[in-house]
Length: 304
Ligand SMILES: Cc1cc2nc3c(=O)[nH]c(=O)nc-3n(C[C@H](O)[C@H](O)[C@H](O)COP(=O)(O)O)c2cc1C
Image 1 (cartoon, rainbow, N blue to C red):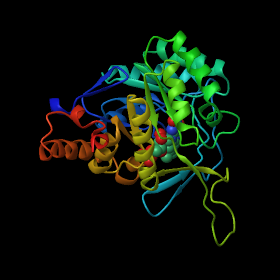
Image 2: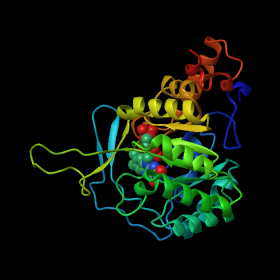
Image 3: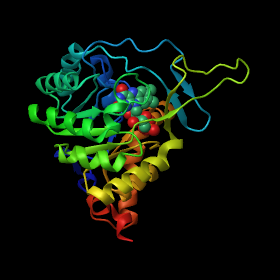
């Protein structure tokens, strides 16, 4: 592995900056082999909640023609009991594990985070921004005071680094500062963006849940913007996510301030070699721009 691609985020040392985004597999031990074959530098689980969740009835995903998806999966996952078998399967492969945690109350976030740590998670990513789950998720990441309290409580009971995943909202900067003040070691930006799609012949919304979250190419410039403004304001460790399909997309997020990136929708569109190709492209890019290491380029767009 190329030393120049090494990075660290929230204290996690990574062989290169590309991991998977939460939700693309990652809740059953059987998924781990496939995820390892993607050649990610860390594995991010699907969001686990305290209770098992079945998720919504199909259709839960609309594939748009321009490298984007709208999904309303409904956070289907096996619940807190599913964390340990998944974590053990990841640990057997020797990769850092970030467990994504969701909840419908602060106590649920705390309980799931504790279970994740006890199961061997190297970091916890608090999903405070799922745009299509009623009664939780999004609300926590939109209200600066609730977000502060949630992160403070989780950070006071777990020793592993806490990362907060946020979506775009008019409170993005305020919430970012608050959660960093509460003990979050990094931010993952961004989650999907609320969206919908309608079948013009049946006149019906495509998704059973009507609304969903937009991901993929259409949200990439939004992720670059969010990373740029939050880095400018806070200098935080940021994991950039949103429409990363190629090394250029990853490079843009790095220049905006991201120390690592996550890839979600591109895995559905481009298949299992997408991460390898992004990493190879980043290696060439470092050579072309004469950079000694990736870390030299983190936030470099701010120096202009
Ligand atoms: C099918 C699907 C399921 C997802 N499930 C989760 C999830 O469980 N937890 C979470 O934090 N984000 C989830 N996301 C959001 C992604 O992690 C990511 O933030 C978003 O898709 C933007 O990245 P992308 O454009 O590379 O897909 C999901 C996205 C998709 C497309």
